[in-house]
Image (tube, rainbow, N blue to C red; front, side, top):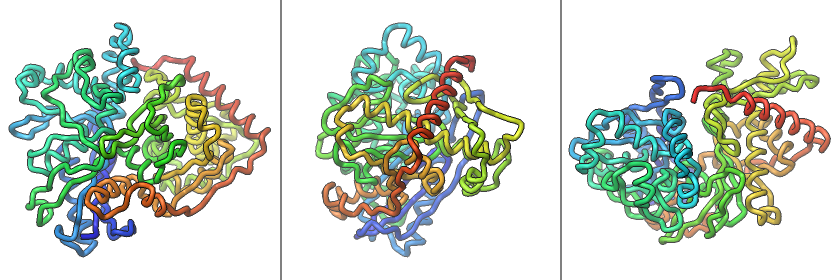
Length: 501
């Protein structure tokens, strides 16, 4: 049994990848599913779509690999974090569509919590800030807006879970209601210092304890899939939220190592070791992973719009047909123009955290065209990464002496133009690995570690292979001029603060 099946359940698609014992990929399958936008700033998924697409891609990947359930040592799950599902304990029916991490509908709940002076205690215990991004206020919203839901929850009839937890419950035929510490740490309900759900937080946000899953290590015996799903029972033994899984897949096991993942959004994590570092720059303190009961922490910066800026060029403006066209198009842009896109389509994430502002373009001229817009969209991702990079180095002075290299993964890293510009603006090397499927690899590693297929972390780190290192070659004067222009553009957007609350 030298194969591991990784489920990578993302925001726009579900994927399954079969890894061999040497971490090479035997097969993979992917399926997109519908996004629902019932109101401005609202984003929902149908839980049944998440489930059926997940099962379908698992079966497809297993078939493609030419193996059966008995060849698979374990299943690992990684998931879009913070997305919230509430379902009936008896029937398994969700009481509402899943509320996606991008959803902003709980802005008023968050504003009230802040006005009531709740942020200091919540931040101290969770390492998070109060923002609609996190799961806790989404659960409260469902309980308060689905008729009878709060009463049913009080009677112990409803369950809450992030997507990993919901999939685990379905995979085990309703036998296991559990999650791991990384996903729990994104709920506003979990004390990252004690490693437990916190009664004070539950009371503040208004979530009954009976709804919550058991919290386990990221590599643990979670349960077994029911035999009917894949032709035999398979152990489920690894779970981590997608950004933490990518950190593991990038082998960022030493304090000071940093990775940045470019998908729909962009998420940078800096391993700070066994000590949680409280941010002074609006970064999040989170659990990077938990192994053998020991938590490793990270500073995290979240950018809400990265790859979705390219999707906007394609679907919103129609100036490209395929994402891959963006780099070559940006390369043709007029070097005399300085066009800045601040892609605050759903507000701004770290280190600004303003859900109300909306995006803007600066520096437009009569000659601004598709090439300049492509340039500005790709560059916006690099500028936002720089803001996170600078905040992390300010929060954790040890990073000044750590080897300063950024490991990158995710769809946008296929663009050499973008990765070179990132290295130029950071003034630091950017390393792209051979295996780009780092999120799925992290989930596979956690499962394979528990199943005895993969070695302990330091030995696993030896498998990490560099595909390309991008070295900075921009002059300091140009770099400083461009960063100053970006800072002015962000200041302009933050000054507007006129979006919907």
